[in-house]
Image (cartoon, rainbow, N blue to C red; front, side):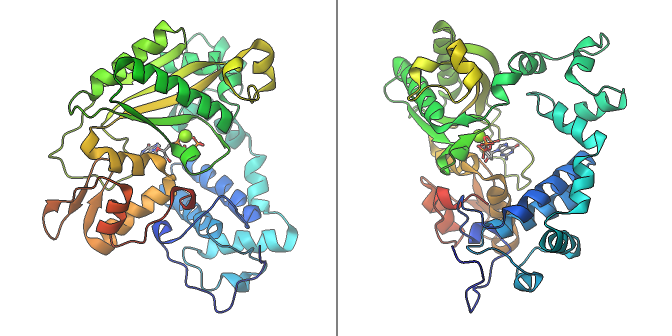
Length: 371
Ligand code: DGT
Ligand code: MG
């Protein structure tokens, strides 16, 4: 890796979908600081500032060189005054005092701890914090708190699901899902998506897309898979959501909303003996199994490319694809469809390459979408 910008410096796009971002991050010292700030703004419901720091981090992640001076950032997009001030501190002192203050702040630490539980978002965490709760034992001892089913499972399996999932574990899960799917119909297919498709070695969960060539059978397929996993004794938790997909609806460019495909959020039991090289978690291995978070989504086959694109991420890459489509092409993109507002028509796609081509973008490989 080079440590200074090559001359002349190629212009860097403000859109992540016009940059190639591998997992090799030469600017970790800055992007890790930005992530803390983004999270802190997220806890304070300041979406604008949160996104500004995520965008800045994403730009730095795409650089094939390390930033060694503020001067080197002069031509980079998405770096505002605040981000540059943080970079300056990191460059001169090796740390940002603003970030250090956040990291030692009791409210930040508590919200971070609470939101690390499956099923607990920033709002619930805030509510618990305001009641004076500071630890898991505070929460579990408070009789006035009602935990929903998801949160109960979150606490029950906390040790396992807060530990990273390895690629070997993800591949073993693919075999298990594959087996469950093919026991139902040999015509169905399973694809590993999310961070693992982008080449990550570890993830917080494992994401799969399952499809059947028979249109309209998506809900049935997922229910059958769930049933199969249950009969094998592998299902520790299941939140199934039937499809609410409406093919006439225009795509929603806002990223926050989840898509409307049939899906389920699961916690599965993974046996050590099924994973090449054993389980990633030391503690889990002595027990012989571990719990893992798995998401399955089942789009209709004609929407497969859009679903695959959306679920492959990264979040920042997908946000910018949608922003680019709207601002630069007058098109609306989401996990379901692409709509051209000029022509007033939907644009079909059977592969991700079709979607990039409709948008007039160079194709970016999944492993280059780690924005
Ligand atoms: P991980 O699991 O932490 O290693 O990283 P990813 O990239 O697999 O992230 P994950 O599992 O949270 O989500 C997988 C992809 O699904 C993500 O890259 C984008 C998409 N996705 C996740 N949550 C949302 C959401 O709330 N809205 C939308 N539109 N897409 C989402
Ligand atoms: Mg994931």
